[in-house]
Image 1 (spheres, rainbow, N blue to C red):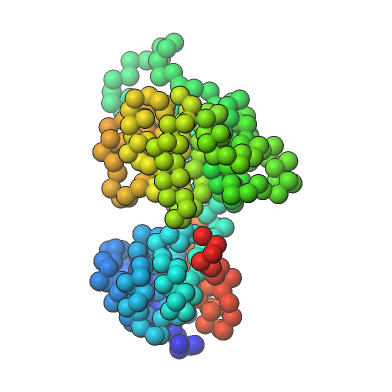
Image 2 (image 1 turned 60 degrees about the vertical axis):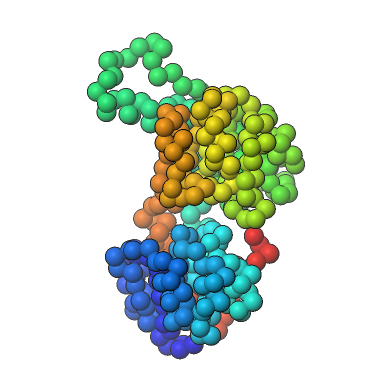
Length: 328
């Protein structure tokens, strides 16, 4: 690798400040019109790049990695999730993979809390009613939703984001429950006044609101399967700002349609950008375009992490945000 000006290929348009700094530091090829790369484009990039900087929508699968030239030594992903990268194939080719953890925690937790408020209180339904011109004024039984104060919130995945959601939710009077691979440190449990459920099935059947905050891995694909979704108490709500693949989306749409699940707030989808047509026709669903982390501050911080990871690697050290296959 050319230690002075390594060849970096960036797959999508990044914030101007990030791109400018990358141009200063590296021999950088940008994607100025932000056209998503096809698989052929990604293979071509992998063949030429010394460092590839994809985003979470670029599928860096085994085919792409096997096509990579010997000079490709680092995949510095712009994003936290790594389910779009075949980590095993990268390890076999001795290609280091990095991501940008931590900097999106507060932004994603903010959006999660916004959905927890928006769905039971029917905020987007009310907004649509006003814009339609059909609102004829206040009425005592008009647009009735549900109070969240005093309700039970079940968080699936008590990592950084799950804990940040819990801290916000406590301020709104929600009782915190969670399911995780293992219980968090007792100090964190005490701070959050959180109840740990080893059994996801048991937690699902008792919660008023479910928040999905776990990563997508082979182990969490359809973690909320048809069987588990049907365990949710009638009238419960569900929010997902993690990954769409964690939920059996077709079953969720059916349960939302028949009222067994009262409402949902979704920022991610199983086959995004395609959205299940059933969801599009439901009024009790808030649908967002995967914008949970979409803040200017967050994107700049992600870019800074990408640059630090690349610079550290070029200087011959282990990047701070190295991804190990066994972590996921």
